[in-house]
Image (cartoon, rainbow, N blue to C red; front, side, top):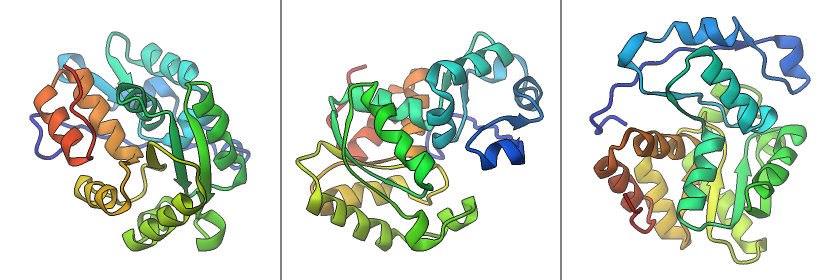
Length: 223
């Protein structure tokens, strides 16, 4: 978002440890207190909850209810919500999926996408092979390993429209996704970049949105 005419304010949540270990996403403190740490009034137009797996665990409707109840009257997105919005905009209906999650979370993605008309035709998790436990672990996965795993997915997948790298903790720049897309022959989307695209779309920043669209090797989105 650095090149966009957009100010980004951030805050951070903790999760209830026992609940999170069981696959839950109950923030501490609660939603209203967390969102109150962001600037008040007209300084904020969009709330972006930056956790893909939480979107899938909670479901879009529950997550949107939490966000709108805590800070009503705004636009809202998350990586999961944004990925679906982006795929629908560009008629992406078949994807290969790469995640860093354990089996419970990883396996929840196929039915999540299916409810939105998107088929996961091949998927793989790096959690076991790379012993990924924390966000820091995920952020340190090198780009060449991501490319290798995406190539492996394409080798076993039926024809796909795009590849999706799920988890906002992966360190992937827009330029990285563009290069990967050109090297692999399919658009490569990722959580944090999809959320940035959707935030720009919700804000009506169409020029910046379309610049990102072009960099990701996708056809130009209609305004």
